[in-house]
Amino acid sequence: MQYIQVTFSFTAIEEYQQDLLIADLADIGFNTFEDTANGFIAFAAAGTYDEDQLKSLLEQYEGQFQYTYTVAEIAGKNWNEEWEKNFEPLIIADQCYVRATFHQSQPQYKYEIVIDPKMAFGTGHHQTTTMMIQYLLDADVADKTVLDMGCGTAILAILAAKKGAARLVAIDNDEVCYQSTIENAALNNIRNIEALCGSKEAIPEIAFDVILANINRNILLDQIPSYAAILKKQGNIFFSGFYESPDLDMIKAACEPFGIKYVDHKKIGDWVAAYFTK
Image 1 (spheres, rainbow, N blue to C red):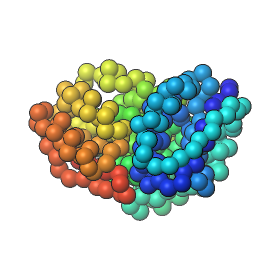
Image 2: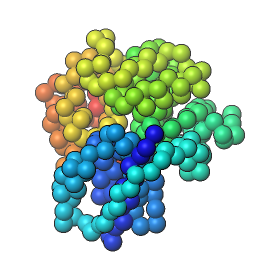
Image 3: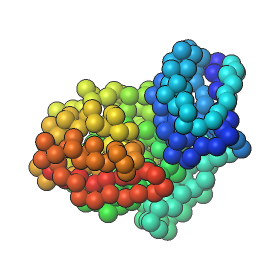
Image 4: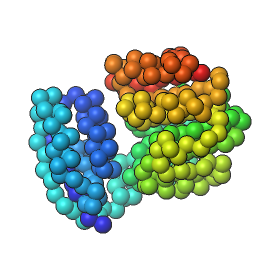
C-alpha cells in the first residue's frame, strides 16, 4: 500500500498545540505519527489523503505557531517494526504493567496488559490514556457492564475485564482499531469483550454501569446525549481527550441536563480526564 508522508517542522510550538494538531490530522485520515527533532511526521493511506482538506485544516492554525511542511508519497512501512523501536513498557500506579508481545512478562504486577498497537491509539503512553487507567484502577467494575467508547487498542476494556467486569462493549469507528481490539483481547485471554466498528449509532440498547470515553471534546459533546440514554442511575462516566479550559466547563454543561454530575478531574500537562456520575 502507498502512503502519504507529511513532515512538519516547527520554529516554536507548545506541546498542547502539537497534540491538538495531531488530533485534528487523525480526524482527516492520518493514522500514524512519528516524532522528529523539529516536529513530527504524519502518515495516511494514499487513497484517503485529501490535499485540500489538509490545507483547510492548517488554515485554522494560522498565526498560532510557525511551521513548514513537505508532502511525499512513500511505499508502506513495516509498522510493527516501527512500534518495536518506539514502544517501551509502561508501569502505572505500581499496579498496571503495559507491554508489547516482544517485551518480557512481569508477573509481579497486579494487572499485566499485552498490547499490539499497530496503528491504533492507546498504548497508555499518552497522558489521556494514563489518566483513564488511573481512574479505572480505582473504580469498582466487578460484575458490571462497561462501554469503552473510542476504544483504540481496547487497553481500557481489557483492564476492566481483568478487574472483573461482567460484560464489555468496545467501539471505535476505525477498522484498524476494531481489528486491534479483537486481536488484543485474544492476546490477553479476554473473551467477554464485544468489539464493534462504528460511532454512537453502534452503541447497543442495553444499560451500562460504567462508560469510558477517551476521544476529544467535540465528539464527546455530540455523544453525551447517547451516553445519558444508556447509563444506569448511579452509573459512572470517565471522560478524557480534552483540556481544562474551556473544555471541562463545556462538558459539565452538556452533562447537566441529563442529571450527570461532575465529581472530580485529573490533569497531566495540558490534558484532563474527568469523573462524572448519574
